[in-house]
Image 1: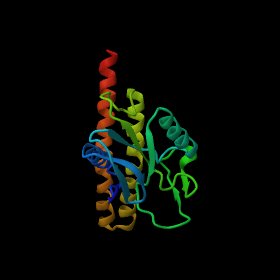
Image 2 (image 1 turned 30 degrees about the vertical axis):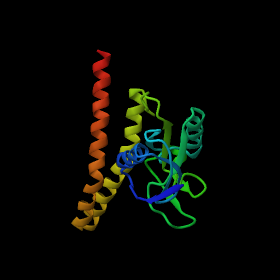
Image 3 (image 1 turned 90 degrees about the vertical axis):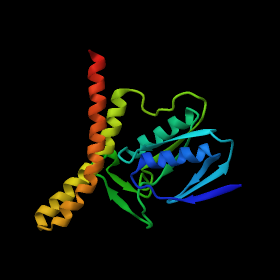
Image 4 (image 1 turned 90 degrees about the horizontal axis):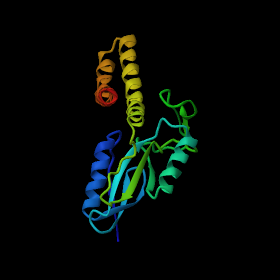
Length: 195
């Protein structure tokens, strides 16, 4: 018997990951995702664990290769949207993305900005990023879109002289600072290990 839940997490990847792991602890395993829908089947509690990975800045071929690499490693992987886009024929320009991933369409990476990765729980650590360099690069890719939105809102607020836009720019500044702090902490840890 399957159960469907409707949730929207947006860019709150950690919250989405925590919720999926909580569902697994209660004995539900993910079998399908859609825009806001998560479908689970009953299983033994603590059978699986989940990680949520942002891949919205990757070139579509790199995303597909990474998806296949994770599946070849024995993980179950699902593409997931980060935004709610209920329309057909969308094109999105992502100036923060890698060169080949800046234009996203329905046939490429549009509405496939996240990967939900499931691993059978075996007592071993479950990390998708194991090296410091990889972790730093990942958090920098998470920080870029929010930094871009911050600059755009600030610029619009200054040019239009409407303070509301500048204030709206403070919203994406929060994740920028959070990811910046994580990048700095990792770089500091790298420096301390080199000594």
